Structure formats: C-alpha cells, structure tokens
Length: 196
Image (cartoon, rainbow, N blue to C red):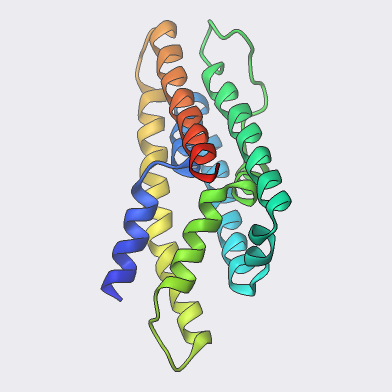
C-alpha cells in the first residue's frame, strides 16, 4: 500500500497538464473559477479511471489512429488553454477571455489528456493490493487516489490564486500568465516527443 501511495503522490505532484492548468486558471481567473475547473478535472479523472478499469482505454490506446487523434486533440486543447491563460491579463491582454474555464473545461481536458490515461493505467494495473478481490482493490485505489489527488490540485490552485491576489502590475501579471502558459506548451511538446 505504501508503494502505491508513493506512486500516486509522485505521479500527481509532477507538473502535467492538470496541475499546470489549475495553477494557471487560479492565477489568471481567481479561486472561484479555479475551483469550478478543479471540480471538472476531478470528475474527469475519475471517469478516465473508469475507462481504464473497464479496459476501454487499452483498446483505444492500442489503435494508432485513435492514440494519435487523442494526442493531437490534447495538444490543441492545451495550447488553447495556454493562450487563454496567457492573455487573461488585467489590462494589457491582446485578447480578453470573458468566459472563465469551468467544470466543462476541466472535464474536457481530462478526457483528452494522455497523462491521465497513462497514470491511471499505471495505478490500476501496476500495483496489486488485494489479490483476492478485484472489487475491493479497485474501490480502495479510487479512494486513495482521490485522497491524494484533491489536496494536490487544491494546493496548485491556491498557489495560482496567490499570484492572482498579489497587487502586481499588469505587465508582471501578464508575464506570470505567459510563464504558466509556456510551461503548459513545454508539457505538450514533451508529450508529443515521448509518443513520437
């Protein structure tokens, strides 16, 4: 159980699309918008876990065109989110995002997030906790994952919101938003490179 908990912690705390976009939404749009976004991410990650547990993810990811479609959709959506975060600055934004990312945006990200599928496959197939009961093991894993997932994402949201609450100049706020957006773009590049 300790090894499983450590694996969950390490895979969640490392920057990926979910945590980076959470911090970015918090920094660009504030805590309330970020909380709605995290709610969508949480629902989405649990639905992805169900897709993995059902075996559907293995079928989808084993098909090259489906895997590539998922990767392209994920890259495009992450770039779109990065642009919204970068240009959500106070007064100097080149484009202004009137609609804040919410539950739907979080859900969509998780459905097309390759890291969500890979991580859930690792958790649900790589660790045997209760060899005699697949149901018990699956339920315990869902519980443990959520007990670690929720606080980590809330910490990233608080960090992003702390930036939002600072009395920064519009230029500084814009640069911070751009840095968070750039980090998301780097994650997209790494994902494409690792799957190429």
